[in-house]
View (cartoon, rainbow, N blue to C red):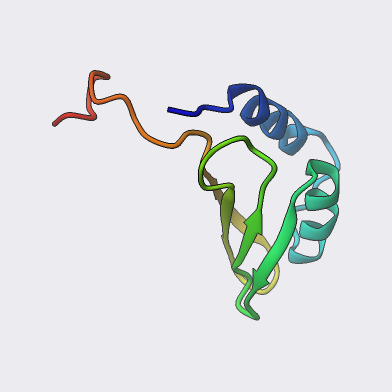
Length: 89
């Protein structure tokens, strides 16, 4: 299993910095700061990003509307540990 905890913490820290307005136009600035790349974008505000996280699927999905980003979903590990509570249920 590959887990990029340091990369995930770095991205969370970056996202928590003041000054982000999370507008769709700010996505390029966030990606440049994070070292990520926009690989697909829709006119409805969603996008697919290529991350630099060290995992098997270095992608992130962005959900929003034409004005703002509402959610960024990013893989920070390849697989879950089946022995962790809640994963085997």
